[in-house]
Image 1 (cartoon, rainbow, N blue to C red):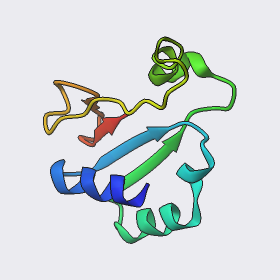
Image 2 (cartoon, rainbow, N blue to C red):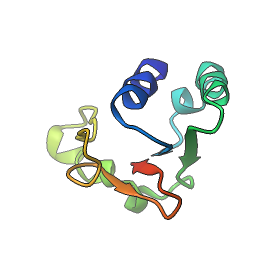
Image 3 (cartoon, rainbow, N blue to C red):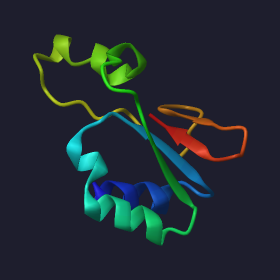
Image 4 (cartoon, rainbow, N blue to C red):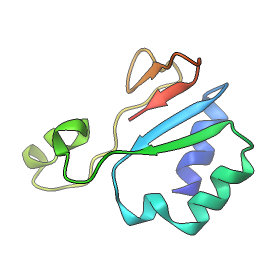
Length: 93
């Protein structure tokens, strides 16, 4: 997960808000330490438990036979997989 976050920070400028589900690796000690070291540039929020309707990736899993899904991202957050928050941070779900 840390490598994924490093990749995002390299390619997306400014503040970044990542919204994740409750997967244990998303809450791992290494992830928390990495986020803390970013001094406010990277922020994580987590979806509430038992709310698959709020997680857009959940609708993609059954058609793929349960295979893992990585949401499509691009350097332009408005094109695919991202949006701007009111604080100007790029938001990725």
